[in-house]
Length: 279
Image (cartoon, rainbow, N blue to C red; front, side):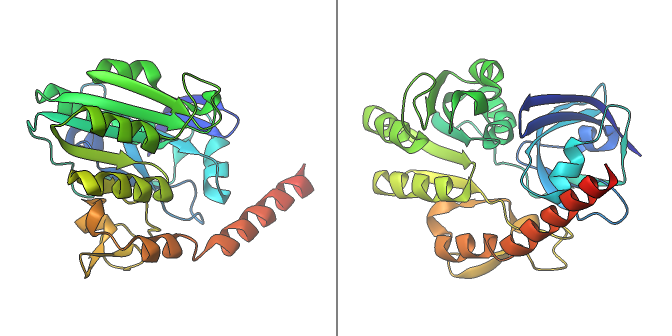
C-alpha cells in the first residue's frame, strides 16, 4: 500500500503530500504523472509528480481541492494509505541542452514545472522561470523554484505580491528582451497555456504545453483524454502529457475539459451533504 508519509496544508484549498512509492521514485522522470484512488469506490485522478527522492523512496504531489476526490484526499492524514496508486505514466519531458529556455507555472502548475525546470538547469541551460497565481497566498515553492532557475520572475493577478499581471505579460517582456529563447514549457490552467502559445507563436519559439486532460485508466485504453494535435488524434496519457502547444486544437480541448463539469459538481454536493448528515 502507498502510505502518506507527510502532509502539508499550504492554503485553504491547496495541499502537498509525500507518498511512499519506492518503485515509482526509482523510475520517475520530469514531466511524468501518477494516477491514484483514495478508496475502493473512488475515481482515478491523475496528478503530476512534483518531486522525488530515489534513495528514500518517496514522491511528492501537490493538488488543489476542486471536486469530490481531491476533497477526500485532503481529508487523509499522515500514516493513511491510498487504495491504489500507479505510475510513472506518460512520456518524460525532453531534457537537453538547448541554451536559453523559459519555464512557466501557474497555480498548482508551479509544482508540476519544478522538476522540469530543475532538470533543464542541471543539463546546462540558462533557465528563466515565470510563476504566477491569482494572489500571493497561492504562490507556492518560490524558494525551490529560485534555486532551480537561473532567473525567477513572479507575478500575481491582483498585484498582492511582487507585481500585478499575468504570466503571459511577463513572458512577452522576456521574449522582447531575450532574442535567443529556444524553447518554452507551460504548465497550469488550460486557458493560461493556450494564451502562452498565442504569445510565443509570433516569436516562432517552440512551446510545450502539459495538457491536463480528463483521464480514466491512464494507459491509452479508454480514450477519454484524446486531444487533436496537428490534425491527428492523440491520447494525453500515452502520447503526452506534453505536446507542441502551437499544434493543439485548443477550442476542442477547452470544451472537453468542461464535459463532466456538472456531474463533478453534483458528486461533490452529494458527498458534502452525506458528511453533514453523518456529523
